Length: 503
Picture 1 (cartoon, rainbow, N blue to C red):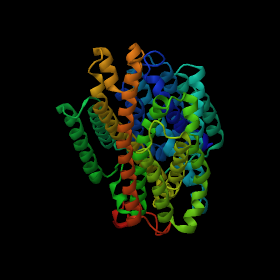
Picture 2: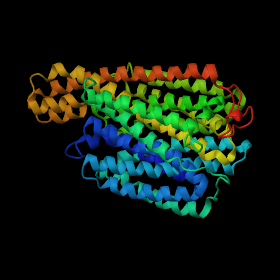
Picture 3: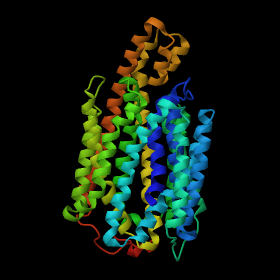
Picture 4: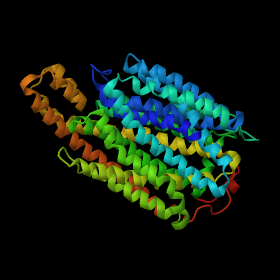
């Protein structure tokens, strides 16, 4: 039942990746700009990340099953609003509301697993939990492609409603209630600072990528966001009831896997963002075909994630994580050489390798995080793990999307000098805009399409190279600090720095 609840959260984002091309279409979608497409993803992930701390504590206090039920209902209502949004701004707002629902669901699933299963079974249960992510990734793109080929774009959000309804009934009937017998107070200021800091920083990165980094407002947002996040960290260190206990990061079993999760999702989600445009525009595949091309990534996750616990027991978390990171770096780096004529089977192979790599990173990293904490603080560990993942995903889309947008803009500019002003503006903004403008140009359209494809592929190469370098940094982190054996030492005690381990 926890897996079904998890599916609805992951399913939504995997479907959305396939729908981005349609949402950018001014006729069949909302005519969203490159920046608005990024905010469709990031409005969800930033609210999700900002509220995970609070909802993790609320679940520990009021009951994890109760919090999951509230999250499912909120997620379903926000999905309805998303399906019938009439403008990009409305969809961004509805997606933010979905993020609030997801923030109530995700930490509850993992913390309930930690309370229901004893340490001997927990690693395997978390492997199955992570495998459910692979299942959602397998279903999402294909289901999204089918819906987009037969219905309007809003159907990709409407499909969440029956899944939510099933989840509410089954969770109410079958999931046991659990809570922390000694819950902490809510850190209102910490939550506010984290949300403001993350949103401000990400806004600056996305706006700079879309309109250029030469404007003072962009750097004001970036520097201001970093300053607020620094204030957040300072406040958390002093608070008697922090939403994020930064002293946890003294424990290597906690800090190192958190860092690995952040690095991997930063790189992977940024690449997933632009690969949909590569497949649907540059290669000309339909949404359904694009979903099927993503399938090897999901199949590899589904196959390898449940088996990773046995691999960790045999070889240790460091060896398993390093192999996963190497596979991920190779797969992400491949996009730095893939072009418009690369055989599609090559792309399928690298998607499979990427899925296998991530399947051997997430379960051992998550198990290490959860085993570093006592059971009654499972909500804290789950919240931190998922927060880092969502923040990293949002920043990956923002940073790598901005690199892509800037590279595309520099590459396409020479081909725009002879175009009418309106077509020049649309084509200079994104590859989707170039394809839309080409439909109005007549005989000169093929020339613009060729220039747009070339500019996009060149920009994609730079973004992919950066993603591979970030993942390679994770290899160095794992080799230097990842424990060789799982479950060594006693769990860290939240709020007692003398028991939190050493740096």
